[in-house]
Amino acid sequence: MASIWVGHRGTIRDYPDFSPSVDAEAIRKAIRGIGTDEKMLISILTERSNAQRQLIVKEYQAAYGKELKDDLKGDLSGHFEHLMVALVTPPAVFDAKQLKKSMKGAGTNEDALTEILTTRTSRQMKEISQAYYTVYKKSLGDDISSETSGDFRKALLTLADGRRDESLKVDEHLAKKDAQILYKAGENRWGTDEDKFTEILCLRSFPQLKLMHCVRNTPAFLAERLHRALKGAGTDEFTLNRIMVSRSEIDLLDIRIEFKKHYGYSLYSAIKSDTSGDYEITLLKICGGDD
Image 1 (tube, rainbow, N blue to C red):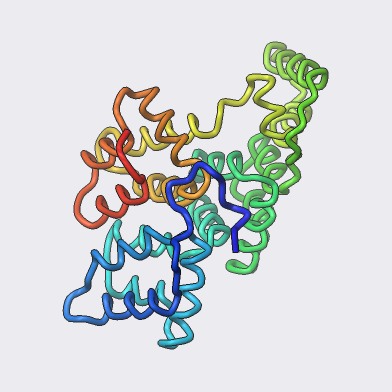
Image 2: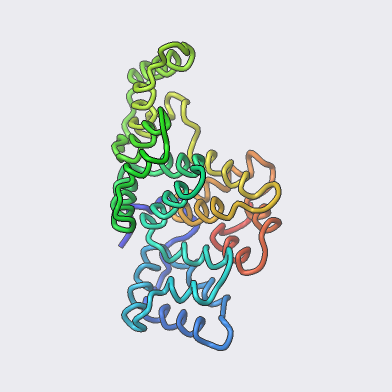
């Protein structure tokens, strides 16, 4: 049942002695009772892996003839509702919806697009593209094409194509060659070879790129995104929810380490001081501990 989305540095793991029917019933009671039992909802949904949560969703639908996400939407509100719905959404669908939101309305959220497309593996990208088409009946590539332009569009389309090399082998000779090309393309502003640039940054494997020091590590990049989402006036819950949920089974432990290293205080304390109520409780459970 292990999902291909699961890494070894996540804060959420499979729950032992898991029973989807027991959980579905407990959730139903928590929602249907007099006043919602938020504590029960939080403890179940933050202590099960996404693969397990999907089984609860299936069981809930079979037993009560209703979509769990619809019942959560009807019963909860605000940031807390968005976060709980995110937890019961399959990862590929969740990312597809986040991409759609990033391209909706006036102005494209370029940061969100870049963050999602540059931190997902080829396999994840293929799943996201499929989910996008299933949900919106449009191809992800077409939407990216119509919402972005120039070299940015070209790079995003290459990433969305999910053709990044997934091997863990590294080639030092190739790295040196790539580094030279990137240096030339960057330095030598006239006649920049953007195609080469895009090809290298979007298609080489992550270990290969690390060898060139031209990409920062993903956890550090995401720690910086979280820091931006949590500091200043108002919380950017769109970014906060996305990173906390999507990385909870992949590398959230590493993101926590990078956060503390760069900002001198823990992600846990940043969430604590910036959020409140059931929303705060849920995020702290996903965060998994203080550093």
